[in-house]
Amino acid sequence: MSIEKRSNGSLLPANPRTLFDDFFSRELFNWGNNNYSSTLTTLPSVNIRENPENFVVEVAAPGMEKQDFQISLEGNLLTISSSKKNETEDKNDNYTRREFSYQAFQRSFELARDVVDEEHIEAKYENGVLKLTIPKKEEAKKRPPKLIEIQ
Image (cartoon, rainbow, N blue to C red; front, top):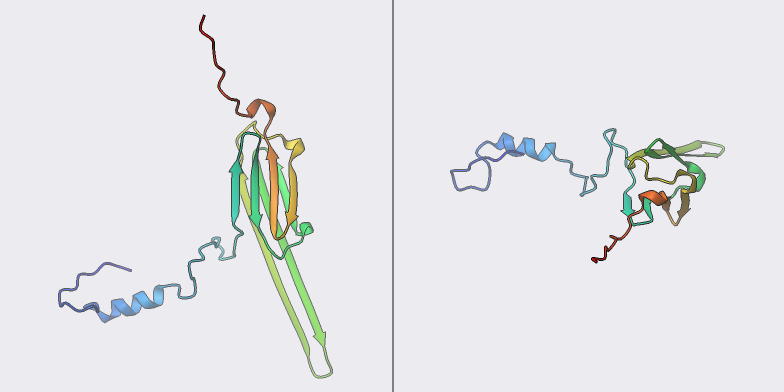
């Protein structure tokens, strides 16, 4: 959409083609859901929290099963991916009805180097949310400032 000066006092643009082009270039059925990848597939929402002990990653992925997920940590790159395929077939004397769907996504996150305790990462899928708890190494945990006594 472009800004156009309207000198005639009308609410309509001077060039009706501008109004036409603007109307048909909008995404009419995208009601604020901009959670799409460059391939126009939906990506699940992710919350990431850090506390002194660990990182917590929550992925909203309802309708999945825990076996649908693949989680890997390669170096400091955490990758969460999933794929799910459903197929149903209903055969009757006069017709056969087949339905299928396929869902897939992949999200990757770069973690700080030498911070994650790789051996103690936990993952749990419950109520449509995949939750990863990624503990920090002991030496990477933030410690309160040390008070130095003046003598």
